[in-house]
Amino acid sequence: GSRPPIQRIADTVVSYFIPVILAIAILAFIVWYVVIGNTFLFAFSTLISILVIACPCALGLATPTAVTVGIGRGAELGILIKNGEALEISEKLTTIVFDKTGTLTKGKPEVTDTLAIGLDENSLLSLAAGVEKNSQHPLAEAIVKKAQERGLMLRESVHFDTLGGKGVVAEVDGREVLIGNRTLLKEHKIAYAPEQEEQILKLEHEGKTVILIAFEGVLQGIIAIADALKDTTQQAIAAFKKEKLAVVMITGDNQRTAAAIARQIGIEHVLAEVLPQDKANAVKRLQEQGQKVAFVGDGINDAPAMAQADVGIAIGSGTDVAIESGEIVLMKDDLLDAVAALQLSRKVMQRIKQNLFWAFAYNAALIPVAAGVLYPLFGITFKPELAGFAMAMSSVTVVTLSLLLKKYMPPAQASHHT
Image (cartoon, rainbow, N blue to C red; front, side, top):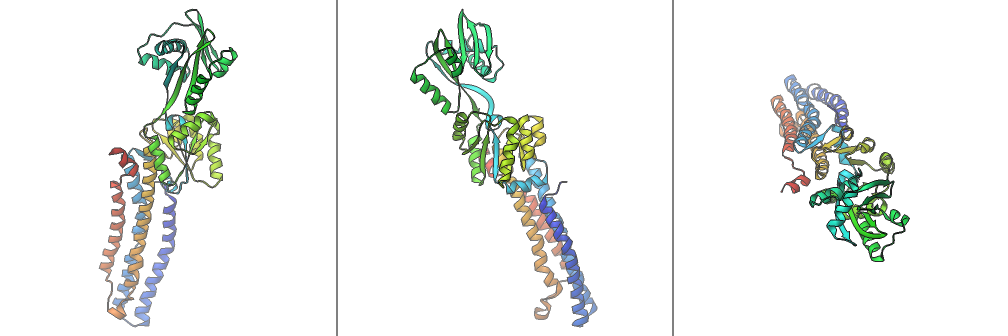
């Protein structure tokens, strides 16, 4: 029931169109009957033909039919478009902003590398997991999950303690085991070789979080954890660029990790170390620069940014509040559907414009004929019954063009399905 702004343009045009047509019809009658002195029947037929052809029903149908069919087609493709306005704004977008965790990435950190130094890899993992099973942290859960996948026995640990922002410490087999970041090792005066520092930096440049494991005053191993990208992320970002949109990634990660992930995906603009509550402000700043912004997200803290953006796109696997805030909801957890939503919106808008063109074209071409401009030279008149046929044809053309949208397959999804 919502009306896209283009519908309002059509409504405004109709409000001028009707008086103009009435004036033309009456003028044609006066010219033929009073000025030229033709028969009353001829003059009256002219008046009726003009009114019948100009009946603006095709103009009234142009927008709602395309919007209805377009939104229905979106639903079939797993794209829920909540209002007509979202379709029109989608066509004007210049920038698309992505939340990183859970949108570009799977939101489930996984262990990617284990580098054992003082002991073998499995012993390192079972030791680390034995300590980390006491922690609720997502990174700790990733280590435990990796050890379980390999079917390793988790070592027993006691005296577990969390050191905020640095890591954890516990006792295993009477030895104090430290698991955490550089700061933790520095505090305990545990040094390590330059080549190990190189390995750590290399992993960080790959966009991974590095966890160090040490006991007996020596670095025993390095575990790298990354939040894997969704399978279609790179494809989707390339497709958005093809659609001439500036792509921005927003994340709370540190600059080095964020830049590394953005490089992998192919995103040049990165807003790193952004606190969840500042996402909406970041969107607002882009809008103040004159950008039309879409925000794609999935989490509770994405809702304000979605509401601030010109169009909010919610991933269907996300939280209810995000889905409620988005004008467009993707039923599947696939970013290519976000591209498809944009392509569908553009297609619907293109179809509305074609519909409006044809609705006007019929009138523009046939009203002069109905008014009798060809009669003096060629003896051609336009009978009221033919005018009725032409009026019906303009409506049929518009509805047919709209119904063709049912067959539309956005290129982003077509490439995905083949």
